[in-house]
Length: 188
Image (cartoon, rainbow, N blue to C red; front, side, top):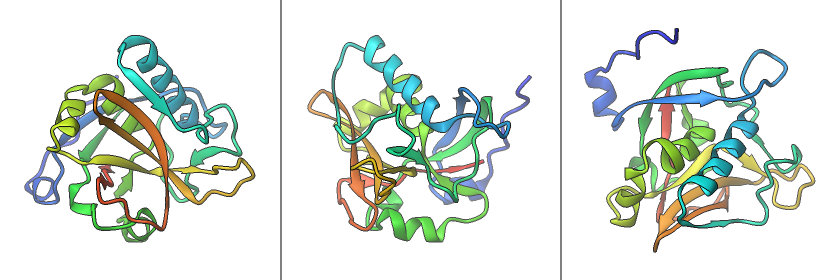
């Protein structure tokens, strides 16, 4: 019922995309789209129960509070149910800040939100080994805004990483560069 995956083009490969991912959007946002915060929360909670790896979560990420985490306002809505997106792991954007890259997004390109958690924590766990071996960078999830103090002060982005056997979910300021973090992107 989800149809065929999008076609893979030479342009996709040249732009650094490594493959096509299958994602799932849970819940509803009231406009017929999935709830991206619920989607991230359910996948993160599932990974914590499923994978028996050490985990760490920043105290400022609270998926249960809408004034703490959200999909950035300019981000494209995520479909409900299964959907495809082309994935670029982020090394080409390691020298940029999240805020600078957001300004450069093309019409059909955006950052990861719940998709980054799904890829690393559930569907493509081999990416964790690649992170551990420094074959791909840690990931800044550019489509997730985080308000560290919970008062709609959205000046951070979520970050996910796997290092020293620990799967971590943290935050980083939108205007700071974190050299070990790439900014993975999606093409719908």
